[in-house]
Image 1 (cartoon, helix red, strand yellow):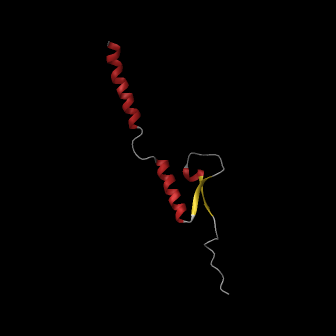
Image 2 (cartoon, one colour):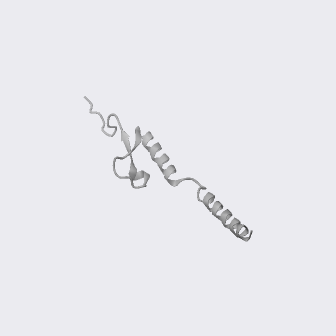
Image 3 (cartoon, helix red, strand yellow):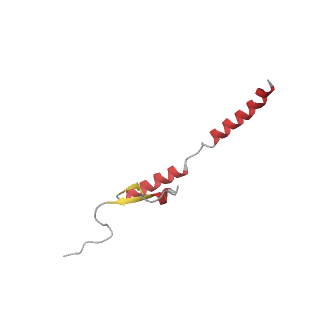
Length: 77
């Protein structure tokens, strides 16, 4: 009976610690969403790079833009 009384608070503390670590926004997910929105605003789509994954969304994803270049002004004829 003593073992149960001593183990119960430890189990409760462990369960609370596990729940507490999941609280709050996920930084990687919010950064990935920001990168995707910036890419969409430029007319592209965010895709995973073919390089080795680093765990950093900015390094692991690239913005692919299809279509004509937008920085070059057309020449007047």
